[in-house]
Length: 259
Ligand code: ADP
Ligand code: MG
Picture (cartoon, rainbow, N blue to C red):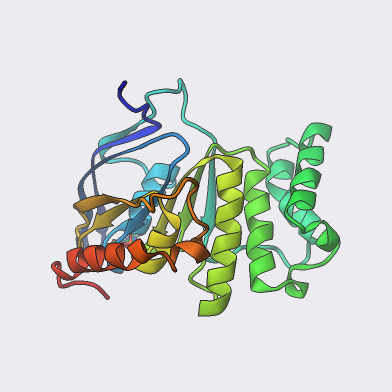
C-alpha cells in the first residue's frame, strides 16, 4: 500500500509562555500527523496545553520551537476556527453575522453570497436570516457560527471546546448536528475537548495529552468497524464505545491528572 498522504505534520512542537512571574512550559515535543479529511480530537486534562496547541496551529501565537508542515500543499490551508462562545453580534441579524468575515475581508462577491445562502438553506437556518442572535437556541446559534466559519471556504477547521457552554442534552444534539455538517463538507478537522465521551463519539483518531507541560501519551484510532462512521449519537450506543472509553480513561488516569 502506498504511504498515506499527510495533510499536516506537527513536528517537535514545544511552547513556553513568558510572564512577569516567570516561565510556564505549556507543551513539550508534540509530534503527530493529520490525514486529509480526517476528524481528529485532542483530549487531556485542563491546563495541559490543548488550547495552546490549537492556537499554534491556527497561527494565533507564533511557533517558538518545532514546525508545522503541510506537505501536500504549497501554502497553508484556509483555516476556520470555532470556539466555545459563538461570538455572534447581537446588533446584527443572523445573515449579517454569517457574512461578517466575508465583509471584513472584502470578499462579499455575488458568488460568496450565493454560497452562504445555499449553506443557510441546506442547514435549515434560512428562516432565521433576519432574526437576531437572542431569538435562537444555543444549538441554532452554534450552527450559525459554523456557517459563518464555512463561508470562508476553510479546508481545515479547528474547534476549541465548541460545545462545552451547552447543557448536557443540548450538547449531545448540537455536537451531532455540527459534526454531521463538518463531515459533509469534507474538511480536515481538529477538535479540542476535555470530554472523553465527546471525543470518542466524534473523532477518527484521538491524541491523548498528559498533564502540563502537555506531551503525547498515545494516539488511538477509533474504528467502529461499520461501513459508514456512525453519527455521534449512534456511536455512543455502539458496543466498542465503552471499550475505547475504558482504554483511554486508564491512559489519562495513569497520569493522575484528570480533572
Ligand atoms: P488547556 O486548553 O488544555 O486547558 P491551555 O493551553 O489554555 O490549556 O494552557 C496551558 C498552560 O499554559 C496553563 O498552565 C495556562 O495557565 C498557561 N497559559 C495559557 N495561556 C497563557 C498565556 N497567555 N500566558 C501565560 N500562561 C498561559
Ligand atoms: Mg483550553
